[in-house]
Structure formats: structure tokens, C-alpha cells
Length: 353
Image 1 (cartoon, one colour):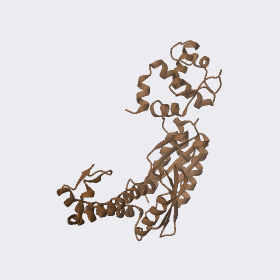
Image 2 (cartoon, one colour):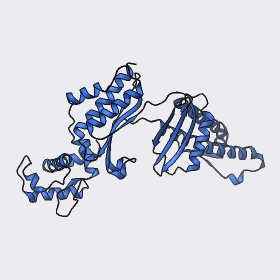
Image 3 (cartoon, one colour):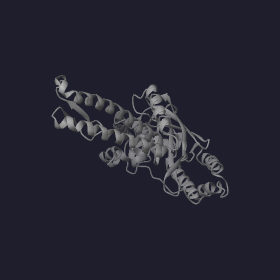
């Protein structure tokens, strides 16, 4: 059970209805919803004072907010997330909307033209800005560059052998420095020759496995001799603890050299592990998601929502995504199925080619 479901299950029916009606009223007209408005809308008669008490409780939980001292309430980002996850009723795509999306696609058009038409139609239907991520490249990588945009945003520039250039924004690991990005790019470019992005990741993982085997071979004798022991063996955080290293005398010089070699291998292993994780972040295609306000790092300053859905090829592999950017006061019940249907439409068309 999700946190949202837990919060909803903790509410009684009265509180849940007040919360739902405040959010629905706000999404419908964009104005704060007051207690007097709700007295006329509730399924069971409640006084304005009782409704105000319930709204104060919801405000204490961080689900509602009062823009002005005497005004009604509006949902917070947390409240919108709770509503979307637990109370949103998503209908079917209307016949008119479906017909417009299908008519935007010409069977004999190339993929870029088809995506342009779909993007324009989607924007018109939803009155929002449409976002189309073109199919991910599977051709050979010629060069990779990483560029830091902000503490929580980075850009990877992928140059492919067929001349295509693709930019992807992603969230880098916490604390990743610009020099670490340059080192990762240099390492990957040295391996990239003749490989696709997924093949490149496989090459990095094979190097990780080779490092691990070398560490095992060197450490085996030390552990048997009682000079060292494993901590967190087999895990990413594993390390070799050396006992009494200062007592390694001349007749154990090989052991001292082995320990130095193991340390070097561990450093190399950790660096390659980091790069493998780093590379996987640039490869991932998100599933169906709704990002509300600050949940979406790209648009957090504009108080907007991103509704995005992936589309797939004939192998059911995610190769791109289609979405809509709009205000947080979005008609989710209508927009979500339109975006979902559009992604399914593109998937069907691409699978048939």
C-alpha cells in the first residue's frame, strides 16, 4: 500500500469527501473553495463551521493551503499527488478526441513528420505544451559528453555513427563532480568504438566482473593466512579488512604488495561501478508518470505538471515518450487518458512498420 493510500485510508468518509470536493472545485475553476460552497455540494448536510474544521485538519496534514486569511482552500502539491494517486477518476478518451488524434497520422509519413503532427494535435486538444521524445537511437555510439546543468540536472550528448545527435536530461548521482563526469566520458569513449549504448553498458559490466575476479584471486591467500577478512562480502560496499598490516615483515613482502594491488583494484572497481550506474541513468525510459510541481525538476519553478506516457516498438521496448505540460490545475481526468491513448496509437503505428 502506498503512502497516499495509507493517508486516504486514515480519513473518515466526511474528511475524504471534503478533500475530494475541494480539489475537484479547484481543478474546475482555479479558485479557492470555501466552506459555504461545500455546504451546498456535500452528499450529507454539514454546517460551514464543521467543514471549516475539517479543512483546517487537512491543512495541518499539508494537503490544503489557504492563499489568503479569509479565503477558501486550494490543494497543495502533496494534496494533488494524493488526489491523483487515490481519488482521480479517469474516463475513456472521447470519440471526438480519438478521431482527431487518428486523423493527425498519415500512414505513409515518415516518423519525424508523424510525431510532429501528433505533437501539434495533442497540444491543441489539451491546451497545453506537448512534449515528444523521439525514438531512442540503437546505432553505434561515436562520442559521449556529460554536461552539468544544475546540482540535480545533467545533460548527456550522444553522437552516433550515423550522424544523429541526441540530448537527454537526467538526474545524476548526488555529489557527482564535473571532473568525475569528464572521467566517465573519457572512460566510455575509449570503450564506445563499434558499440551501441546498450552494448557499451555490457562492456562496462564485463570490466567490473573482471576486476572482481582479480580481487578474489589476490585476496584468497590473504584470507586463508589470517591476514585479512571480508566485510559485506559480495555487496557493492564490500571491503577487505587487513589485520596487523604493520607486522607484515620481509618474508611476507608478497602479501604487502598484494594488499596494495587489491586497493588499486578496489578503487578501479568502485569507479567502474559508478560509471555503470551513471550510464544506466542516461538509458532509462520512464513508465507512465504524472509529475506535479516540484516533483518535476525541469519545470519546478513554473508550478506546472507533466503528464507523460512511453511508447514502444514491436518488441515491446520503450523507445520514446509523449507528454503534455500544463498548470498544476490540469484536467487530469481528461488529459491522462488522451496522453495514454496517443502513446498507444504511436506504439501501434511503429510496430506495424
